Length: 322
Image (tube, rainbow, N blue to C red; front, side, top):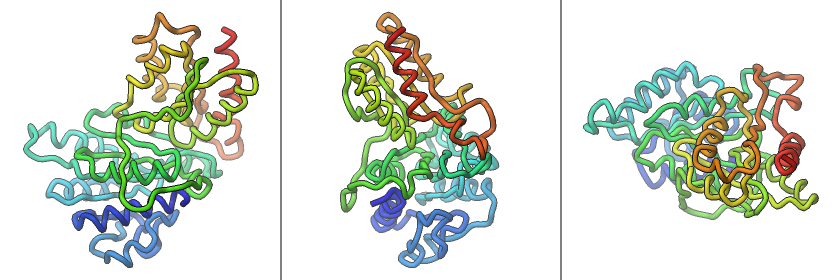
């Protein structure tokens, strides 16, 4: 499957297994969404369970909060992560705090918000952003980002069934570009747990989503120079797997973190601060952050803006020679 097919399969399985699962967003019905992630689901489950909404993100999430509060399992789609900001108040002030404000008398834990994020499709400044760090600052949410079709299906099913509101961010550059073996039927992958993709002894490379493809290319380049890289996919931004990352850094003594979002205030900053706090005496070099630039996302200069395997490879070399 490609990633779109895996996501569609996960939604189909979730809707079939639980009649309370309701899917809605802009153009998700007959059209199947702008990327066709929800194709044929309205045909199969009817307009009561898969339907279009008006073009109002705050309305979509406000409606989703209400559905979740009364026991439904809404899966709301925001067509592009760049347009999630009108719904910011509903997500961070309502969904994330619903259980807390009531002393656990009521909650919106059944809510899942799906949204495509990131660059690499020549989408320009309004269709290319990576806003995960905004939401990582919000206790009460979970933020999950898959890297391939297998991960997307298992993590999405786990997100829909998790008893907390989950923001599920899908790397749109990989929707059709990433193809891989995906188990048939129902399975879940754990939220909040990083995955060590390949073990190494010299340096830890950490990322999530579409950036993992780039990191793995950099690791292959470094391997030709005799550098043994440990590659880790964080998978969940909130909560994030501190123990797995620190265990790796205690072994390698070096860390490079890469994400598409701009440098300042990016989630790599939180990772770097926590790792140096816990692993300070074991670090052999400063922690490096290879990220997007501190500018709005450009159209013509997209390649220069994004962190690629060459930038990560240079950071690996600099860290080893520090």
